[in-house]
Amino acid sequence: MRRNNKMRDIRCGVKGDYQFWESENTNAIAEQYYLSRLSELAMSMFKWKNLPDTVDSRFLEYTLFYEGAVIFFKDENLQSKQLAEKGGYLALQVVLGGDLNVYRIPNNRRAYAVNGYNNQLDQFNSVIIWNNMIRLPEYGRMMFYANKLWQIDRAIDVNVKGQRFPVAILCDETQRLTMKNVYKQYDGNEPFIFGDKNLDLSGIQVINTGSPYVADKLQQLKNNIWSEAMMCLGIPNSPSEKKERLVANEAKVSQGGTLASRSSRLEMRKIACREINDMFGLDIDVEYNQDLDMNTEDGDSTEQEEREGFDNE
Image (cartoon, rainbow, N blue to C red):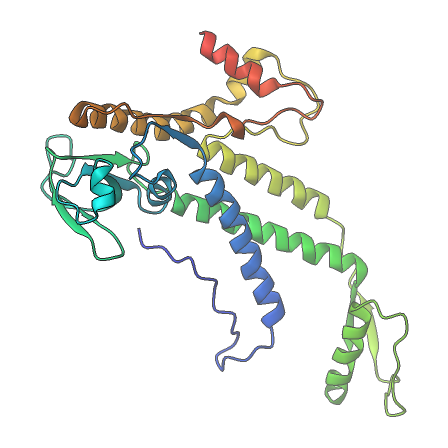
């Protein structure tokens, strides 16, 4: 999947003017904020154990997040003496060929890196690590949720500001620039607004728009979308409006979708570990990062108890 990590073009209008630069730039910052938060959580979900020193676990998860697959192999002809002395194992980006086996796993694989490194591989000397059971990157789904979150967040900003300035100003076109400058001072919390003798207020009308306060409902909607994103990733998340501590069975049911999503990603990594260990005689393993689990607001370790309940079954 092609990705674009750049912030959106902040120029507005067909002529590239900057009339709405401030609001559009804030929109872009909000979008990048939520996308970076979700991306960071997705890439920190799993802990790899006993990886060779030449394999970067951060890059491994980074590539799985953005591209959905990583190739693990041993390069017998590494030009880097330092890497060769450490075993020569690498986990890199991969281009998958069209020669498929009966399970639609590509037999032809080409490992590559941004420095120009290339290595043609096959099913006998490499293992593909998939991100999940549908073999897709996580980036697209996190973009989906980030887009929802930033739009709700900005709607909250607009609604809150509407409580502070619930007015529309009607004036003559010749007074537009003057009124914009006056409004900027008002928006900037200046205690006094000074005008010169040419400031004509006689033709100005102010209409109260009566903007209703809905920021609290929007915040709740944002919490729900965030919880849905966490469930998609497989990270336990208790909604903030939760008042009572769930009993074990209720908690288990409420986290069913979360555990299923996590299992899809964790199981594919586990399968890759077994194949790597069988092929290269290593002892690599991967596990869910328990540090991401959350405690309840009252201090009870509900998630820990739920997890122990799952483990005991």
